[in-house]
Length: 111
Length: 111
Length: 111
Image (cartoon, rainbow over all chains, first blue to last red; front, side):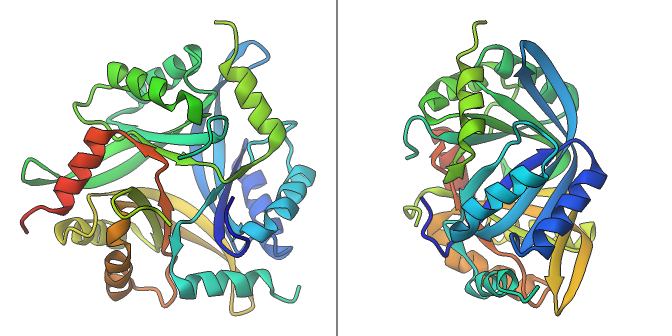
């Protein structure tokens, strides 16, 4: 587990760019994310209900703090169009301290 | 080291999209991966045998369990066209439990 | 914290492809990075000085060793056009040993 004030990158995917843009804005607006990066036009290969699927998707890289993970997961579930969205967190092992402070301040912004 | 049933993301790269698509299908079909995401059109800069190389590649993000890493690395080596492929695992620090269960079930699928 | 000779992936972003290409070459040339991958055409959403920003960027995935992180961060700061660049390291939890050796040798290359 990452220590509570370390930076984490949470990944999820959505089917199209408008949904990705909307989700990114919403998570930043609500201070669940300091920054959201969208990697467009990826493809995902997986089995779903017995069928091999190859789907065009957008990948979201959501930067937040470990202490915010549970809140972010709940918010993502409420906003996400999928029944079973990928929600995976990766902890930073090192980070520029001034960038981390920028993220902490962004997440504490007065909405 | 990640604990054995945690989710890991393993990265590798290949030179072109058909190879990436084929590798993704093969790893999902053989239950080495629950899901493989392809990020097309990246570029990689590195030195190889004394020359600076800048190559167009596709990046694969392979989702599996830590307990499957050794098997996946062996399978990747056997399928990969490169002599020295990038094979790097990153452990998830947190993950949606229902998504993790989906991945566990996908990896246990009857082939 | 990653142990000193483990592989790390350090991320940063820049505004355009020529800057990304130049930064990648420079970090590989100076042996701060074994390999730099550029993911072009991502978009980043964040608040900056009270305004929501949605910017086109390139994402750099910089492969180096944990023992080199401090040097790499200093070099990135000196080269980077941003006042507050993202500089985030993620430690590999497992890696192909021959690929790790390739990275160690690349970073020890005679400039």
